[in-house]
Amino acid sequence: MGGPELPARTPEGFAELERTNPAHAQYLREWVPAAIQRDSEIRNELSTAETIRSAQANAQAQIVQRQREQQFQANDEAFNQWLSKAHPNYAKGARRAELQQAVKSYLRDDLGLSDKDVEYHYKQTGLLRTPQAQAMLANGAMFKMMKANAKNIASKRAAAPPVQRPGVYRPAGADAEDTVRSLQQQLENATGERALRISVKLQQARRAAGL
Image 1 (cartoon, one colour):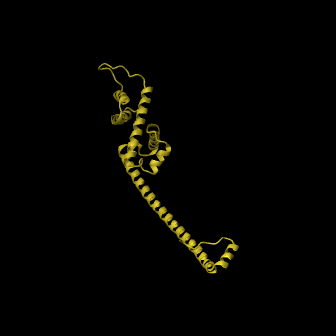
Image 2 (image 1 turned 30 degrees about the horizontal axis):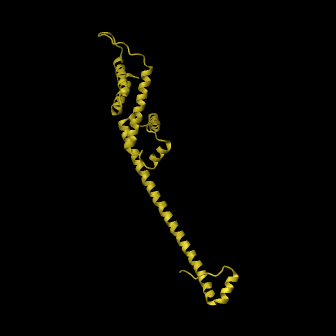
Image 3 (image 1 turned 135 degrees about the vertical axis):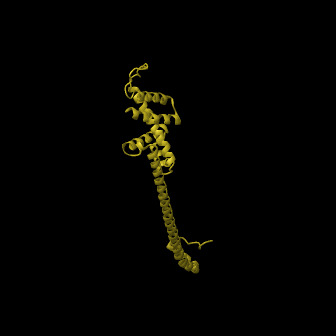
């Protein structure tokens, strides 16, 4: 099978073959260079095919990457629109930077994701990049911030004044402050969606009370 069996790879071995079988020796003189040439051609063909395959794979990867980036950009734009409507005070500027830091803390401290996990699911899989995921993370981070602020205010505020009898003068803003205290107490025992609603009301009440 294949080419003829080669003689010993020494000049003496080939000289012996020429003496004992000159026709076979002549055949080898013609066959060996042709075999070497064909082997070289096959290697070149394989190398060219591998180069083409690699180029095609790289081109496909670039297409996928561009498509992923376009989808991520669309997701970010959808989230930004939602944030501007749902929480306009966090949509830009220093409050937006504060929210971004709070989301990072929420991912790390509350959801247990490492920085490597966050980067992978944000830039590669896109699990953290959908508008829905970004909105849920923003809500979770804002709820955590509001709850922390409420506890901080409650710890600094003096004990509530005694209930006044009808007709006793109440300073301006007292009702708003009572509302803030009431919402703070409700927030301490609230969870989930109810806690988020109370947090929003608390933020509104604090603004009304000038706190």
